[in-house]
Length: 439
Image (cartoon, rainbow, N blue to C red; front, side, top):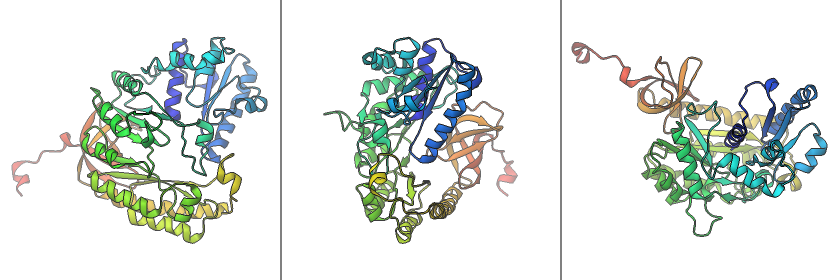
């Protein structure tokens, strides 16, 4: 979501005549877009912000804009006192305050929302920043802002506000504009993306939105994240199974394998519910890959409750597990009402156990691809090799002197590991002589 928000800020600034620079020392405007989903992310945000202070002291005309979840929807006033060297404070997904400040229009607060639309969204159409235009293969398109589910550990509802679905026409116009700029793949985003349209009377749901976006000419691949077990319905499964452009990769967090921990997290499902969902997804979507999120060390998590999580992961053998150690987030129910009673060293031990287990699972799953031919959408060249992804979101590297950016190529997998695979272009495979082929 922050990647998408940052692109909108860059686009808005270019409409004012600014150009991108990769060096902070050369900038007239610096925007620090922040995440505070975990304490480590918040610490990094503050560290980077204070590292910019000397630049402001040397150049008082430098404009520093703090944006994102560190500011939140209501946090600007407190931060102004704490961070006097910051000129502008912007809520998540809103370049309006910065644009208003730079156009000397900061006192007209009621017009900021329209300013943001005029400069950044252009009524749904979206121009990528110049340094990414024509080069970006995969782009993110927010469809739901904020969240109203309020898990006890999660700070997102407090910082990004209540759930708001974007109009279908605005989303489709943005997708079309991205495709016109060379984008081949889009990922529809939401904190709980499956809840798209639930705040709009008689509006389409995510399954219907996928079918609409699928009709955009020139678009080759569609993904979406992140899902929630309670809202991932059969209509959405059928849409993924039936629509060729929608990739068979699902991100649906487990968070914990213990029913008691899930209840304290206010997740709204049980371990058995999650197992049934995974079974149904696999039965409905052929060849699907599934990613999950897991938090270890949630308040009150016992060794046995952690081992329930371990056993679920071992049994289900999911393709990817994003792991996190619990850290209290200010204002959340867990921070206010529950003691953070699992020691840090124990959190790390549990984290490492799951990490090692998932490495074994991923290696086993990826090994099945060895010698197989799959389609890969190539995104960029990294250290002399082209990087791309399969429909199931497996990372693949290929050595080639050709320009593969934005191309979907059939490749033959020649090596597999837990986190990536190597391949060769199938069309360049050596041709056997007749006697060799029949030997």
